[in-house]
Image (cartoon, rainbow, N blue to C red):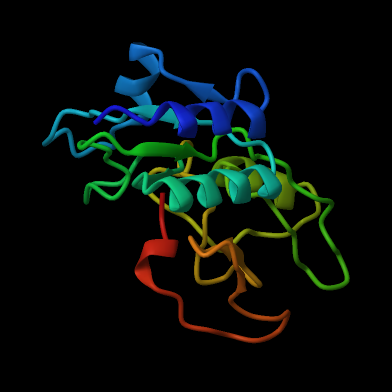
Length: 179
């Protein structure tokens, strides 16, 4: 699937100069997960660095009818991060900021691309344990885990969604879990 020129122009205005890739090496790497069942075939990879850039990409996809595959560490074994039909891959790898640990609340806010292992180390410096542990700890990204709250995400309608407020619990659809 070839992406419309108007869509690619929009990405180039919404993202920094290195924020979108059509490079075949990037397409092969970021278009797959560990299933290796289907060959990757994304049309492009977007590398946002902020939630506002994520919003811009999601909005552009919705407006131009471009299918979108979010991508974290690509360590899943269910094909959830596989782009096999010309989708745009939204890579979260450049969103790794970790805020200071709140010792009083025993909480930490991290961006969606933070690698689980790095969050473990960040919390351990303060004598705290991050309760999320995956087999892919060294490469999995936070996107959302049951112990993370609150969570914000952008819907294709461009509306911000918030799953919970601090101290509450909530159920989240499975598409917001894992890497």
